[in-house]
Image 1 (cartoon, one colour):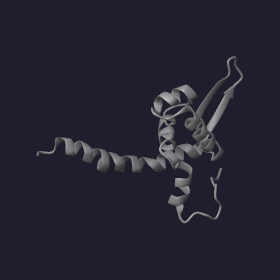
Image 2 (image 1 turned 90 degrees about the vertical axis):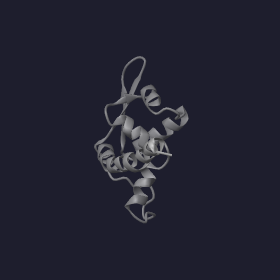
Image 3 (image 1 turned 30 degrees about the vertical axis):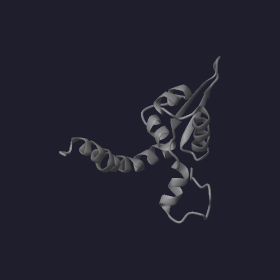
Image 4 (image 1 turned 135 degrees about the vertical axis):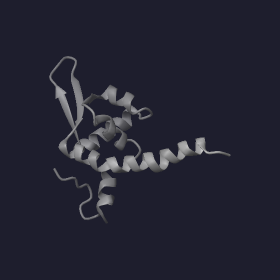
Length: 118
């Protein structure tokens, strides 16, 4: 499934992907779903600080973009689980080098600053 919110409005591939993952919470949601499917409450605990409203909104957007799959089970009470689609897994794979860069150059520099001689 191709992702296209603003056809023709993108300047480059980075612009297109930022339209899908933009904001503080979407990449954290993708990270939380990378291991297994989660229910809404589980996701809320795995992404501390996100409000229910924002989490619900981002999950809907990621679902529309084909990144997240929402499975509703016919049970009482209803059970809903969120998981990554194949497109979502491929997006996480593309984001992995950025995460590594952040660990090496941002988080590593913060840790180094705490241990640097004065």
